[in-house]
Image (cartoon, rainbow, N blue to C red; front, side, top):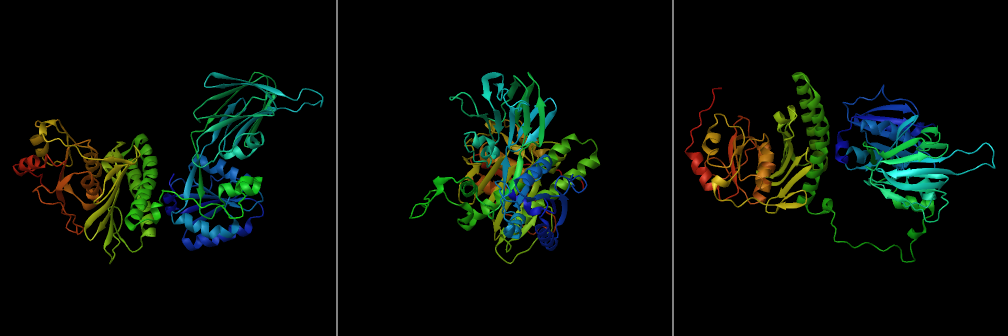
Length: 568
């Protein structure tokens, strides 16, 4: 999940532990000024009465790590990101201090916070079906008679491969987040938890010197078979049971991650480890810690266009999150009116995320989006946005839709980003530079023969483009997204693109990307294609894009074409 999406938060649900009334009052006072509703819930109570899945919600916990764990249990199944405020004592997870509450919230609502994806663990056994963020522990049950046997034997299998028999106090299966708890005390490694998706199997007080922790991917199915009575606990007892001999426990990575909000006001992870665990390797020498020198650049602090590119990428991928979620709902809806409501909501959510993020970062720029009121500016820069290009595809559950964001300077497109949510592909380019899909450079084809070429078309009102070119090429395809058509031209998936009518937000980003990849872009009369931001008359423009060598043959054929338009 992308932190930029948090810029559209309109609801905060706060789980409040005893003794946190002052912090709650400060939250409510701050939120009232922002026009955001706050719903406080006492620790241990259900949030169903206040949670509305249609609202952009941020979860907040006031307390220590125990309260934060309850927040994970509450918010993770609902895909709600969580910010932990430490009003307790010892905290590895809730890392915002009360003095920084308002500043951390301000950063979050500006879309500048990050959202960590945290691996969770799923445990299933007789009497238990639970998810945890820290660990699953299987341990011996203390005997009634203190002189009786105090160890347990557990057989462990990984994806049906026998790992071995563990004899001792038991075992822990921990996530990277839980690696600083029981697993660390049992000589397990510390895992950096941010976006780290793994599990580790750690023996507890084993009777064999050579037994070491094992790290496995989260898809691994760990089957633990008891060879005597054993206690099963998830996250320190938030779910627990007593198992008999020869019962089986299935432990694997949970499909649903937890989403943890991190701000610049959080206690950093490794200083927190050093402070709370006395980790001596961070003790600086007399000259202080050595400053890092690295070739890595911080794109957000580079030149203006680099910063704009970074913001556009973050805005596009953040908007892709709700589009993917709502696209899944469209696929399961039967009634047309319900589909229409979902598509409208998808357009609205994506547009709100993008315009809010760009407006926060560049308040002096104009913003021109298909889905919202135009924001004028006296300066030279305007953003052209189509938050959902390919609405018809989206409405029918087709994956060919995109998010298109372009930056225009004095009428000329200078930067473009097109994001394809269903494939997670991100196309981008700056005018005069190279074009990329993700981090891979892309270029157009060099075919110069029409009969070897694949063409893409947009709206073809009388079928004339299809009839003129289908037999003379290797096919004409209509995808339904002008932005994607231009990106496919740029990446060599097609040799030419024709659009009968375009709006500037349809094609601005794609034009930058296609030109940077080597494409030739003109109108139907072979004149340079120019964006017209004054579209009050609703006139649209014809666009022809090609790899270059094919362009003359395409324009010659188009000039001889007679278009019989349908009556209005």
